Length: 463
Image 1 (tube, rainbow, N blue to C red):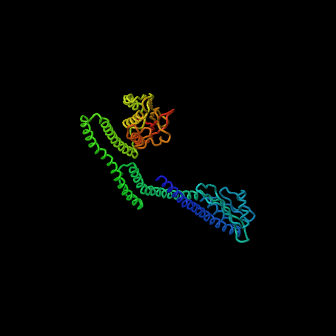
Image 2 (spheres, rainbow, N blue to C red):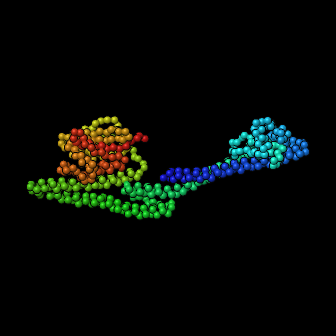
Image 3 (cartoon, rainbow, N blue to C red):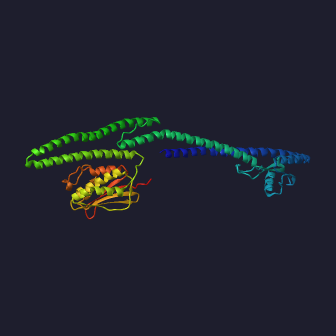
């Protein structure tokens, strides 16, 4: 945002400076050109007056001396001719026979004063010719042509242009610095507010956005702080409720288990089935509490990662998955499931080793539990472009097409798997852990039947 604002302000400053400087440069050039023309016109008038006196007295001595002295002092050539175009005096290498001079003489003898056209610029170097008739009215007795040097005037214009451009540049720099300070004053509170919003959206206690900037932003920050306090309190109460409930239920469940176990020797044989059902439900309740705590921790961890710029070290997904597969091998054999890990090259995955192992445990447990006896579970690690993939595939009954989008929903289980014990939180926990590292979990049908689960995370980079 700050860059866009500065770009707009800079464009406005450039247009404003250009709108001020360009006309000023043009006026400066025009004024200096007029000064040059006015000065040389005055010299022409003086020479024309001397030439008229010389024509009346038939004495050109004063005219010749004055013209030559002028050329010696200023280095500018002068030509004076009479009414018959005959040269009266010529200095500085300028001749009446020169085509350019002859055209000016013709115009002057027709009583048409000639001034150089065009405005001077700093790079102008060509001399300008000016002409004036000698005499007044219809009585023209000659003409005066002067070749004026523009170098001094052009240098003056260059100096004035440099001053104007330097002043414009300083003004533009001052405007940019002022704009940077103003945008920082406006944008900095927005950045703080954005960080606070991101932290709040992740479910973490946000720092209060410091009030600063314009009054509207200060009012917005104050309102956000009040809202953040309310939302944070509600989220913390919800999180504490889950944690406290899970912890508080453990003691009664443990006491209940001890009492039920103490009753076992005194039960009749006919009550064994009821006793087994009660203990199974107790175990299910204990697993559910454990999963609730794990899910709460996973959501908290995902929130932290979502607002933290620092990335944790990566791990070799192939090695981690192979190790977890060996740990689950006895469980798979006991369930009658063939668990196979397909070896491959090292695959670096942007996820800590402990969390990836936890995700792999969820996938193995889910596959072994629902694939059924006699099924085959195959797992592998591979890379696909910028992503690293952990894939677990089974050839069990799988899920229907309409059930695949709900596979990671909390507490959800397929109707065909209702008899299988579980809390329905395992895949939800895995999804939250993976999402915290900018990844996702894909559920697709395996061919010819079964379920394929893919954990897709960015590839890790070695230090």
